[in-house]
Every structure is written in C-alpha cells, then in structure tokens.
Image (cartoon, rainbow, N blue to C red):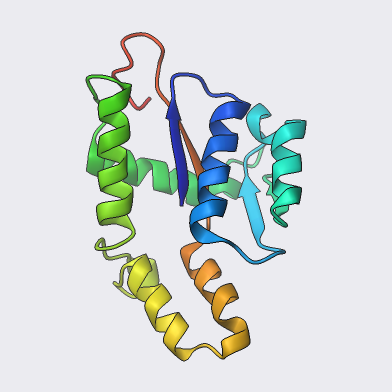
Length: 160
C-alpha cells in the first residue's frame, strides 16, 4: 500500500501515494490500478506516472458508487479502527504509519484472506508459487493500492 497525507486532495497527494506504492511493492508490469473518477486520478501527470510504472489504469464507471467499494471499505475500516481525530498533520502521519505498516498489513487478520494477514498471504504465495509467478502472485495478494488521505485545512484535526 502506498499512502500519503496532506491537507489538500490534489494530484500531488495522489502522486506521492502512488510513488510510495510503486517503490515499496515494485509491482509487475500490467498490474491493474483501480481508482474512482476523481480529478487527481484523471490528471495527465498521474496517468503518465501510471504508464511509466507499467500499470494499467482502471476507473469506476460514472455514477456507479459500488464500483469502488473495496477502496471505500478500506477507508471505513481505517476510520473505525484508527479514529478520525488528530492534533495535527505530523501526528496523523505517525499514527497512519503505525496502523498501516505496523498493524494492518502485518498483523491484522482479514476475513477475505482466510483470517490471515496480507504479509502472511504473501509469504505463503512466495513459498508455493512457481518461480516465474512469484512476483505476480505477491503483488496480486497485496493489491498494491495508492491511498491518498486528505486532512481538512482548518485545524488539520479530522480524517474527514
């Protein structure tokens, strides 16, 4: 997962989240990257970054709120488990790092993954997949995602 925090939802925020996802996961060429039709994802720079990374863009259909249900579910889980209030952007970044990198991906059990953590699914996939499929299986298991988190400009207290 690539993630970034800013007080503005713009192309810089989404580009940073995408950069982090690509650097940390090194996805195989052809990986499908799904987003909604928000302006930051439709921008020329974002689309160029997807192309440069060898990722295939996929966007939800206009007016189809269920098409992006996985991402919406992730944000709902994040808010429910981590909370919505922070004293400032730096504290929000620290708490998000601890939650995503120290818990959600490494220790949190996911019902959709047979009550295993994403990290454990990747370890199992790496042990059992044929050599030429290991990278693709690990990348698919982790579902490389760029998550852009906007903090309101006023007081930077809420995850929104």
